[in-house]
Amino acid sequence: MDLKDLTIKKFHQGLVDKNYSAFEITKAFFDYIEKNDKEIGAYINLTKERAIEQANNVDLKLAKGEKIGLLAGAPMAIKDNILIEGESATAASKILANYKASYDATIIKKLKQNFSVFLGKTNMDEFAMGSSGENSSVKLIKNPYDLERVPGGSSGGSAAAVAKNMAVAAFGSDTGGSIRQPANFCGVVGLKPTYGAVSRFGLIAMASSLDQIGPIAKTAEDAAILFNSIAGQDEFDSTTENIKYDSEKILNPKFEDIKKLRIGIPKEYFIEGLDEEVKNATEKAIKNLKSLGFEFREISLPHTKYALACYYIIMPAEVSANLSRFDGIRYSRIENAELKMQNLKDIYLKTRGGGFGDEVKRRIILGTFVLSSGYYDAYYNKAQRVRQLIKKDFSEAFKEIDVILTPVAPTPAFKIGEKIDDPLKMYLGDIFTVPVNLAGLPAISIPVEKYRISETDRTKKLPIGFQLIGQPFKEADILGIGRFYENSLI
Ligand code: GLN
Image 1: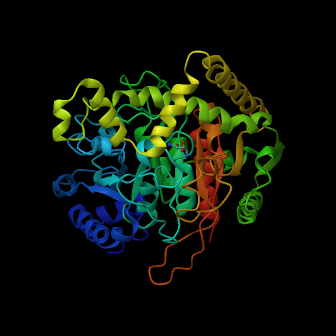
Image 2 (image 1 turned 135 degrees about the horizontal axis):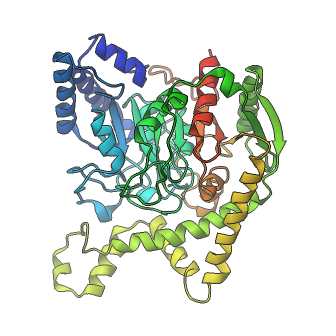
Image 3 (image 1 turned 120 degrees about the horizontal axis):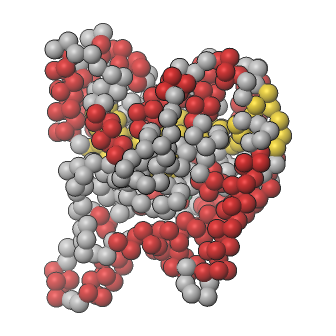
């Protein structure tokens, strides 16, 4: 049984053709993970017992001759900031080390209704803050293509798990690039849906006006299947919209329709400091799309230069509010005998001081500062106004084109340790992904070439992807282009 080329569709076919049972494949994944994840560090926690139960349940259905859906039995990895009832959810933070989720996130509920199998919870930057995976309090995550390099972040574990064939697909969260950038570094596909397309209920909040859950998969086709199964309005998340998605368009796009989409290239995204390899790869993607018949136009997004500053004010402001709930009393606390003797303030200081890592503390402090009296107008309010300008840039551009193509990150996967001591350097890498979150748009990261991990010979050829940004709730456009693009690669 070769786990390597298993996409959701191939997995499903093998299952209904009885090449394997759901139990056998689940067991094979766990054996493979136990052997291979030691060097990668993609998983924080394997949810083996429940996974076997879920797989057996699917086999029972098959034995009874019941028809099963595409996702039934599909082994998936879930980022550790998404709640699965009864399982740990640490967000890779010490402060949640002992926490077990008491309910299912809405997307988990939906996946359970589709009878998916959850292999485990994936490693990440603490509370989704970071771009390299190095901010995990649990362990380092390594890029399967080059173990000296980062897998990207914050959903680094989810991307590495899919790239290394340790799951058929995975879910992550994206506040400023955390699905697209690690997918880009690991040679897989990552979709950040439109703000309001997918319920955030049961996602441990980072910055609520920016966060979205989305799939990380081997192909755009799989990303479409997964998106289709999790999108929709939810009574538990009032920011979800009542959009009637046309599943047919998402799942079976027609080339005649997709080919008509005009693609814009924003001149502000091809800046100084853009790595030569990334520039070449992006040009290659454009060339490939042109030969498929797509029409390109240069566009301008003039406020792009303010996006990083704007994001690094609004995001920490929301982080400081959201993370105040971790007070050492609710959710879980760091057990310490002497704590019991102390007053409330000491408990707060000890648990928050010892429970949060440096990057999380840095953002709470920054966020508290930009919201403080006297600075609120100068920073937070101003950033909110700039956010509107960035949004307007996109809506103006979408009057002339349908989709925007950009690089995902200025460099390919960088070396472990290269940026971790210089937060500003790390933040600069988010330049191409954060405008999308500020504007609430859908975007996808697609590998420029077909990358495949060779188990025996690591070529150290680093994957690079390109980003497609779509109009609100038009995920079908970017998924469709992605699918025809990947199908055209040999
Ligand atoms: N890298 C960005 C940050 O550190 C984005 C994180 C995310 O999308 N969760 O904030």
